[in-house]
Length: 604
Image 1 (tube, rainbow, N blue to C red):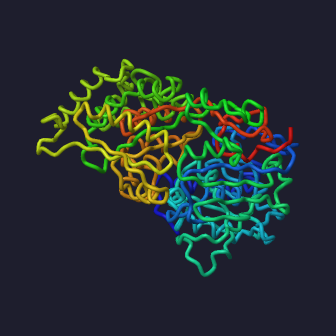
Image 2: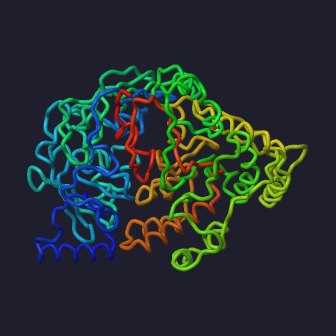
Image 3: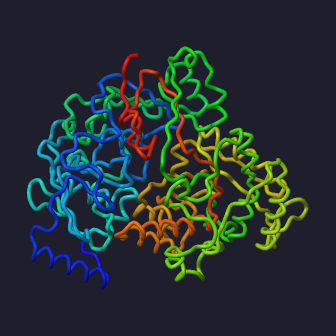
């Protein structure tokens, strides 16, 4: 598994190795690690700050999901596994605190050790760590999990694995990973790799989809399921980690059930009837008008608003630039002009939702208006000639007058199309050879709101002479087609954290143009974006990190690959009154690690 090293990497690694030889104490074991500086919680902390450490155990939650599942392996590209398998059944060496931008604390591992340049990392396993069948979690399981996910798992694991030189077990409780490239995020990424039971895959191909019940070390086991119908996770009464500080106040519910429905509107009706016990509402107008049913009025159902401080991410309709018609930025800009956001937002939300204005908007990482300045400009300047127009000069989304006809923006769109070689002839937008411009919007079954957005936009496109259609496919086919980039345009959502790092290569890296299964659905390739990501993951101070994030945001936004819609600065969650959550909310709000992880059940 030896890798070719750059001259710079060889020098840094050699220096680190020499320092380690001279000073054996370098890199003392620690209880946690942060991307920058030290983690917020000290050694010996009793629990995470955003949990109720005294929460009672018991009760159940029933969550409605649209679509279905046909696999129990969430780590491969084949099949579709229930989200809960990854979230409730498997654990990692370290656990992430969602009340900090990016900090990890010991979970399966009692300590972590690394050198100042993070060229290697060691994890020390807890002796009591065990799988749900009672067998111990061993270093052999850890080494096998790392190698298997890195070579046979989905694309999200392979990028970091390419930077691993070796994985070794110096003793029966220690795993040491040595890196072939300098990348300060790698110790954290390795700490978050799920640990699987090696023997469960004896005689089986890891890449093949299967419905065999998984054996993990997490607090829940799969109790019952029926493919595409439901899955029930039962809290393991013998869970090994219930007294680990990171887990206190978590995994409080005895049962977590996911019921699958073919349509999002059916889930809401099931919630009103009491068959589902919690429901996230994404439609602002509906939140204000549709929650006056009897169970709300008599107090059986509670409406909770949960704020957050995370980036907006990117949400909207992505254009697949592997299709020639989207290769010209002017075409993409024309389609953004044609999307009458103000009218659609008023129609569906009463105008109540803010638009996604950039990939990291709503956070300190978001680009600032106007031309790039200071450190951001310095980072972008070497790539000036290859950047999308507006990256350095400044780019803002077009705004309509809010009327249905959107005349000004339609005229601007037609001008851009004409500059790109498309003209309206006989009421149809055509290229120089007479071929019409058509759009096929891929949506998955149950995406009720997205279908309503697309339907209004399609009417606007007719004014440009564009014929557009919506294609609805079931969950598995949607995943298969988007993994293979077999679509024209699709609904696109990428949640972004307050500490973006190596995952950004999976989202926006050039390898994703041809490599299947990445998150780069648009097929973008900007060396400048990859350079900003490299700066992000190797920054040793927050100022450099912030400048790189803002520069990356400019490149992504000015690339005009996504027609953005809206985001929420808070989450609106309706739930039965017996389901409770802590008053102290994490900075990420209603996000990973929140519901059902830190919720509990208590009779009123």
